[in-house]
Image 1 (tube, helix red, strand yellow):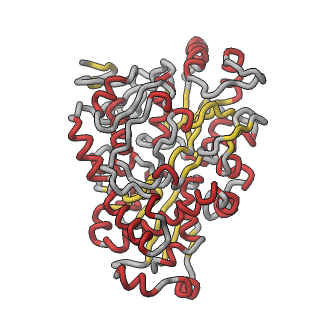
Image 2 (cartoon, rainbow, N blue to C red):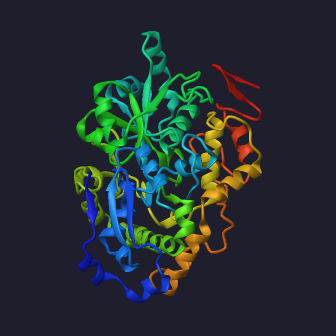
Amino acid sequence: MKKLILGLAATTALTTPALAEQLALEKDVLTFGFIKLTDMAPLAVAYEQGFFDDEGLFVTLEAQANWKVLLDGVIDGTLDGAHMLAGQPLAATIGYGTEAHIITPFSMDLNGNGITLSNEVWEMMKPNLPVDAEGKVQHPISASYLKPVIETFKAKGKPFNMGMVFPVSTHNYELRYWLAAGGINPGFYSPENVTGQIGAEAFLSVTPPPQMPATLEAGTISGYCVGEPWNQQAVFKGIGVPVITDYELWKNNPEKVFGLSAEFAEANPNTTLAVTKALIRAAMWLDENDNANREAAVEILSRPDYVGADPEVIANSMTGTFEYEKGDKRAVPDFNVFFRYNATYPFYSDAVWYLTQMRRWGQIAEPKSDSWFDEVAKSVYKPAIYLEAARMLVEEGKANEADFPWDSDGYKAPTPAEDIIDRIPFDGRSPNAYIDSLPIGLKGEQTVVGEAVQG
């Protein structure tokens, strides 16, 4: 495992002593974890651009083997914080899987994921897909076109297997959302059966992000949902075709967060503020001047210590385009969003959406009140810390007052139907009504008992 260790002399030269004294950092030597994905970019940029330095922080960044190892590191204190799946702090806090109180003062990005299918499956689907006037396949592609393929697999006695990165990952929920919107049941969880494959028509299982293309090529899975650069890697290797991005699934959906233990944040409030300030500046740098810094970001991320993929592969999505079938590259300027649209603000409504999906598929086994969803969201997402850090940046002349949602109550305006693939709007203030509006999944008082949904 490689480490990026900040040299003492260089750090001292870049630090602003007055600011470090003003914050009275409780801890200034920190280790943060990440997974090799392009959306870890705010951490890499905060390090490489000296934003951690400016806060008096001596930071080491360490790539982690998988999401479980990363979470365990934050819980046991080996890591002071990490690039996390948004579902991880929520699941840990409610005791699903590992139990620990994890918080986030900073959302790392919007969008950034895709769903890729094998060449075999693509060739089976393609003849039935609608095309535009130029003969190009129309996007977004509904999972309803995948349904006959799954039925063909079943007729041959073959399970239809797909990969996602972790049970409480955005990727699991996005893949499930896409399948269900197309009439395909991705299966349920129960307290006794945590495979998530109860009643499934498509069988989802965990594969670490960097291993997705190789697992697809080996034929172990027929498709996957993952963040970049691993969808574009399949295109470059000629082994698969991305069929939809999460931007097309749900426009400007929330993605990763920066997570740390509640215990760390309580013991080190000024350090937590300093880290949040550095990450906000990194996100601003990534999006400023219409993504003018993205090529520089690609060069940083391509280094082995960070993502380690070819710059051309990373640039395929990071610079505002996305390639579907080989040669079919289209403009998707908001595929990766790091700051605009209040991307970094930790909205309670984002947390609520993840919790609704946990309930929908049985990870939350029993029905919960709307107030429960609100309380859990507020125990994990910490916009007050974020806004305090943002206020300091504004007062220091490093950020613009207008760029932050000072008056927000933590809930976004409802997502309109036209921004979601199944045309079902989402309002974080009414989680149970939203759950009940979804066509496949647990509703109301329903639970999973044995191999069946009851209630």
